[in-house]
Length: 113
Image 1 (cartoon, helix red, strand yellow):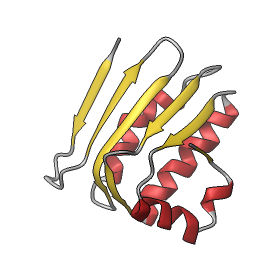
Image 2: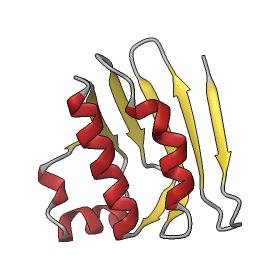
Image 3: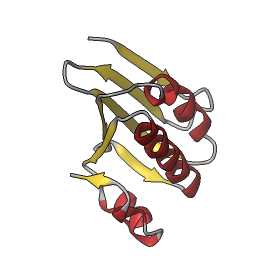
């Protein structure tokens, strides 16, 4: 089991943990994903975007907010996982996060549980 914890250097309470499990890679963003924090999230996702023939699960249980720049990063992750034959699943979207996905029409392109 591997853990990567990235604490945002901009002090805006965003961090990302990544855990490699037997059957998937679990990504857990925590806090508010906005323009100030999305670069750190993108950096944390770099190794995940290179995975192939596996499943990536993003557990959004502790993601309080997502801006359009955060949504863009999720779309880039989706494109990358698809090109590598990897399945991407989003879980536990709260109402505020779900609203951003709904308003942009993104609910239809992601697998959301």
